[in-house]
Image (cartoon, rainbow, N blue to C red; front, side, top):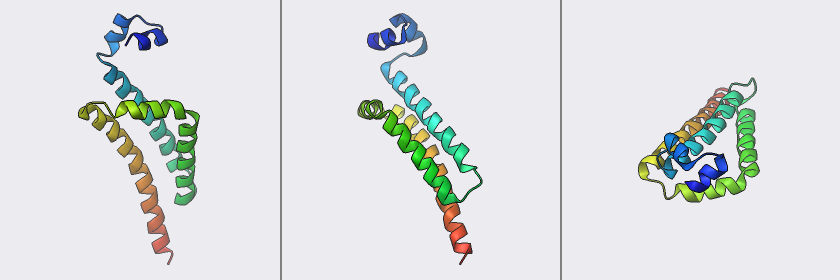
Length: 117
């Protein structure tokens, strides 16, 4: 916690005003990152182009984000494995929201392809 407080330019006691544990900080960060990914995916999902093009754009945006922050994401992936199950579920719920956007685009593409036959 001291390292995090130092990096944030806060006192350790001030950091505890916002987060009780390191796990809470990790969950907050993961949720914040997923919120950004979901927001970008939602913007792309409503664009006026085919489902396949939107899906491709979403995947490209996600991969670019991973590539730009690969060291951070690798470290966080390792750290997330040690989180309590409840905390892991919070992160998983965000990931599922993103996957729902992907699933909807795939289903839309399949429906349109089926009706075009």
